Image 1 (cartoon, rainbow, N blue to C red):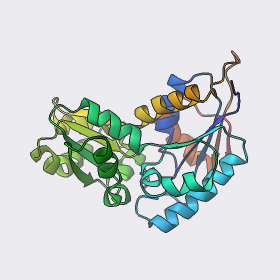
Image 2: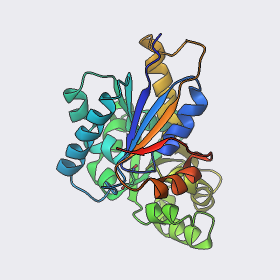
Image 3: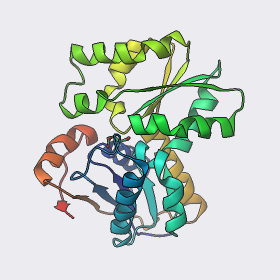
Length: 263
Ligand code: DGL
């Protein structure tokens, strides 16, 4: 039993989709969240830059004595997770493997689609993770760079979101995938539009949901769950302006956010 908090970081506000799922699955656990709002987006940056920023983000979380680090950002999980794991001794999980596992076990025709930022897609991280689990699966990918700004603008229910989704997803539809991994923190907010564009026969895998289940399993297996009977506090830190984070973050978390500080 361990009452220390879980550390979660992302390039900005998007990782709150992971916080939201972890709050549901592990309601007793404390959370320290760091959003690198001063340096977002990561999805257009190089591996070297993303890795350098991520090392600093983990160092920040370590100063808060976290028992597990959850890399909420798909871009960081794709480019830098292996390096981070070698640098730090704290248990660490990313979003790629849990999403890949769930997609492989859900797909009936072994034709899996992946969407994400440019950096995530060009890294080939999901293809690698899927091929390790299943040599039969075929993976088709598509970067969707306009999705992040659409979500941040709050246009998730507007017709333009459907139009953009239809254009990006058309090639994946043509590949007859039956499972699609939402490989970016922001995409769960576009789930309805993506689902409408893909049609009812395509199952959408939410990597935020999958990594939360993995966090529970890892804590349980290593005896690190908080079993004190008391729920712990949630703290949010950002590297830039607090108010913008709160305003946008409440949409991601679907709750009020208090206790945000500038790191
Ligand atoms: N958090 C990023 C991801 O999941 C999306 C935003 C960004 O480009 O930094 O890939």
